[in-house]
Image (tube, rainbow, N blue to C red):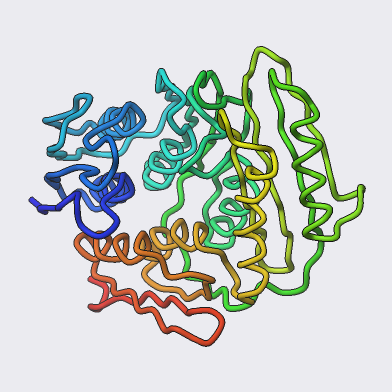
Length: 343
């Protein structure tokens, strides 16, 4: 039984999600204490509980401590089973984080799978669905994995009600990749999503992008959604390059001005552009687990976050791999390698 401290490093939900994936894939059980101890509301929130329950269902796991607010959990996996699955978070908790947790594991099932999750699709502290479609999926595809993400209905905080789906084709083994340069830029555009709030909010966000990025109107898109999907707002900045696509997001909230929402996405996008790295901070975090499962790989990243360092430590508890981060003048390089011979 692998023992994990949920307060280690950044002390958030990623420790639990990575452990769930790795436990299901390797068959190694784990016990985690002090779950999300560094968060304002520690313990299992609704989206984390659903991820645990969903992981248990697809792997036939035995679980103790799976209840709201729980700070301790044990998970003993069985065999991963493909099939058609549906899960409801019941709040605006992130659909995308649940989808990622399940999809990576279901690559190792014997038969294809579909997953349908209801909850939040565009909320703070989680990647929006477009990030999975445009940034994450193409890199998994290069590694030999076929996971198709789709958005049936937008869901914003606090109402939720969004619907996100994933179709997963089994993959015998992921292949390592190297992603050291982003390549030439092919496209860049901004989308403002508004639902149940004045369209002028999105227009102001796009005006900020026009001013800060120098993009013309052809690169600015206002998407007014049906009012019943709101109230909600998000802005997405997409940068398509030869070897990688990045998506940066800002999310609306009460008492937060449109200019501040746009500023969230702009700050991350401009830091990424200036770094010259292949991937930004959040995509780097998402790449670590697939590369570890592949047994190797390398990429340049704009920021080595505490989140990434914590994730590396959790992964190394389950797999014979080691991560190293080499810091350069403008960006860093992350390398993953096996620490023992196969078999």
